[in-house]
Length: 176
Image 1 (cartoon, helix red, strand yellow):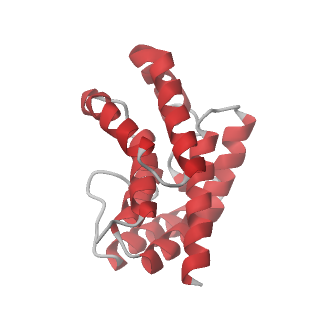
Image 2: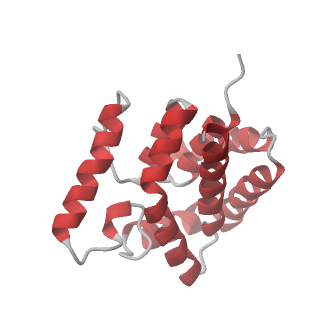
Image 3: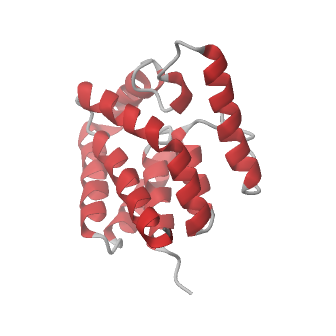
């Protein structure tokens, strides 16, 4: 039985949003091959262009950009509950809701906080379409907010968020 394409796509996007350490760079050619094998032409194009962009920046340039954009910026970091920090009680409740998504699907987040976008994408890629639809649905508003922030910052990674939202829409259509 063939793995559903949403699983491959979300895993690739999670990988591309991952921290570019030694293992990440070593896996980049495999990610490129995986992206090239996607049937969805739009997603394939976006992922291959993102990989090309990363390769053009080079290791040092991309790592510096990654740290600046995703780790040191309050507006564009990949922790989904961090973007509306006016109500810390609400942030704590949202964090618990993300933690519950993992636990309800038989997973736990030992190495990352449960609102870390790549972790959420890996979770969605590891579960059934119905469950993935729920996970992405729960994260959708936060992903859309992050997308607006990426647009404002003119980040190339905006298109990766579009892939996530496209997959969420497709899952919604298939399981509605």
